[in-house]
Figure 1 (spheres, each protein chain N blue to C red):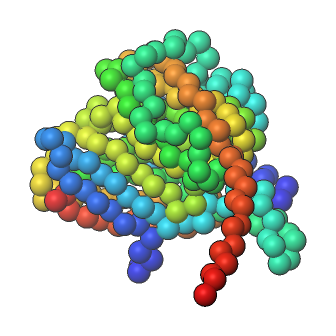
Figure 2: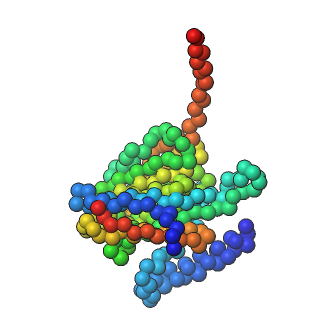
Length: 164
Length: 105
């Protein structure tokens, strides 16, 4: 596992340099992407994840809505999250689950043609806030929703006795 | 390359293209244990998934282990017409990848 991590880190360091070069316009590949943000995804606290994605100081916004996102999730492995935002010029939407071992769940980079809408199905271990960070026009905004990710139900078996 | 892990539904709706995709992928977190061997199942998850419209990138999502198994993707964008091509491609942490195309209906 540590061997893999070392080569993985080496790989992401390399692509990091490449990403910087691409950003500076020195390289013009066709569909090369910025490196997958390893640090952000492996951050294990909400604070670390927020600073890794540039979410610190995000202003609360009522223009980010959780649509059809349940208060109580049927299945903690598949929690549907739908985010709608009417903020103009959205570049990125990040979804974080506060109480997950690694809070950052996913990020969406949207082009200017896209609606401020993303849907995802994520895993949640326990009751948690779900935070959406929207980066638009150089500013960041956030909204939260509380989700009871893991809801245990006890079913009582009722046996029917058929009397003939 | 007959992997076929991606199902795409792309439809025009209210002047915009609504794209929905379902990707078949285990999305292992690396934390769960195999019930038979007792060993941890190594992390195996999609890291990047891109959607292109007529060859131009429209959306790029970065996923982590918290995204559910057989992940779902849904978004909308403008500037598309019926009959245009949507292409979705993903790469995972093991270097695997797949892509699929569909026409907007």
